[in-house]
Length: 400
Image (cartoon, rainbow, N blue to C red; front, side):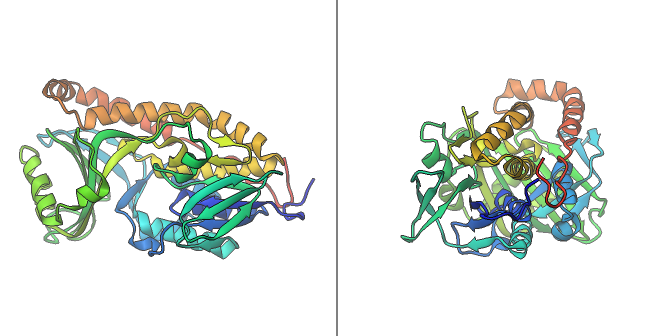
C-alpha cells in the first residue's frame, strides 16, 4: 500500500472556485495532492449569485466528509416540497429534506474548508491558455500574464467553461433552453405567511414560481418563465429591479395571490439569468486534464440538481485519482461510472422543464390536465435521483 502523502505529491490545478472546485480541492488535499485553486474573479464569494436548493445527494457528500453542519449552517432546511397549480390546489408533495442556502455562502464555506486543509486559492486568475507541454505536465496561462504548471488540470468553471473550450475545442457549447430565471428576497408582514419549513412550488399559467418563508416576514423566491430570444446576463441586467419584479407580478396575475404579494414586496437586488444546459460530450478529458460538474454536463436547473451533481463529481473523481496512479485511467473510470446517471437526470430535467414552463397554449392545456400524474412521477424520480450514496472514503494510507 502507498501512503497517501508519498513523495512526490501530484500537483493538481483546479480551475473555478464556485462549489464543485473548492469541494474537489478539499478532497484532493485530504488525499495527499498538492492543490492550487484558481478563481477568475476578485470579488467576495458571499456576494455571488442567488440562493439554491441543495438536494439530499449534495448533503450526503458533505456528511461523508464531516462538513454538513459547518458548511450548511447559513442555510435553512425545507422538510418537504409542495407543488400547486395556478389555482392554488396542492397536487403533490415531496417529503425529501433539502436545504435552501445562498450560493455565495455555500461557495465561501467550501473555499474556507479547502484552504484550511491546505489548498492554495488564487483570485483574479482568469484562464486564457492551456497547453500540454509533455510528460503529463500542463502549462496554464492567465489573463494577467502569469503562468502556472500542474500534473493534473481539472476544470470546474461552469456552464460556459473556458477549460472545456481550450481542452476540448470540438466539444459542443452551452445551449440556451429558452428559459430565463430570476430570484430574490421579499419582506412582508411577519404574520402573513407561516414559517412552515416547506418549499412551495407553483405551476403558473405563464411561469413557474417557488418560495420559502425563511423567518417571520422574510421570503426567498425564484421564478422561471419561457423567453425564446436569448439575452445575455448584461442585457437582462439592463432592466432595473423594480421594473423586473413588476413585470413578473403582471405575468403571474392569473396565479395564486401569494405569488404577486411576494413579488411586489421584493427588496434588495434581484438576480436574473438565461438558463443553459451542456449537450452530451464525447469525452470529459484529454490526457491528464478533465472537466466536471457543469463544465462537463450542465443540466437544466428544473430539479435543483446542478450543485449536488457537481459535488458528487468532485467526491467521486477525487477518489478515482487517488485509486489510479494514471490520471487518464482515473478519468476513464470516472466517466464510465457517471455517464448513465448524468444522462438520466438530464432527461428528467428537460421533461420537468417542459412541464414547468410550457411556451405554447396547447402545451399548457395538456400540462394542466396531466399535472397531478406528472408531479407524482416527478417526485418518485426525484427521490431516485436523491438516493445517491457516496463511495467509501479510504482509510489513511489506503490505496484500493
